[in-house]
Image (cartoon, rainbow, N blue to C red; front, top):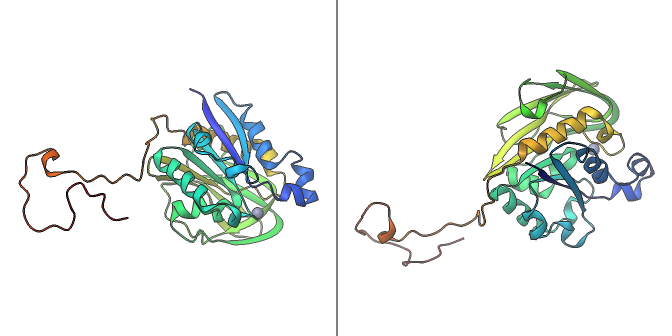
Length: 261
Ligand code: ZN
């Protein structure tokens, strides 16, 4: 089974910040996709904010098993209609991975239904990520802990709903800790949030980080057919109920009515 990954990059800092451009000359999204394409069983392509419909047409999402999202400076420029389209795809079964500052990305906030806020500090601190569960598929092949010499600090409290699983916990040199690898399910879609990836550090060139992302792509892939209309809420007429019933009492809706939204 081949997993088709699509790496979405906001692609802003790479074009207006020399440090970021130096670390990621072809863009962070391309760096991540290149690493994924070295993994057996994954084919990765890219899309960016600047493309028509942000590169996320209905056709493109329909053929995507797992979408990876990196955004920071331009969360507000993502069109709401595209956000809804992405969330519909997730509810229908597409996997999605949110990286680093995508904690404030519109689709992440929509899917979490929470502020998704945190504390932060940009001081090039050492980050040490600890596995919480050795046998989790997202942790496959990783040591019990690994370090990133320079990272931005994200600290608790992290304003997200309680996750299904906390796969990683990060410690920072300044003393803060953070739940840095979290899994969720929304509708039929698997969601993974992974913390590292501040744009002025070479985090996505790190072999352990690349391993986490490729593991997460495989974990998030739901091979079941995509649910075509995950927002459907059909009225079931009396005569099609599984058991025979007789209608009684007053009612608000007309037979066959679509119902309120
Ligand atoms: Zn950052």
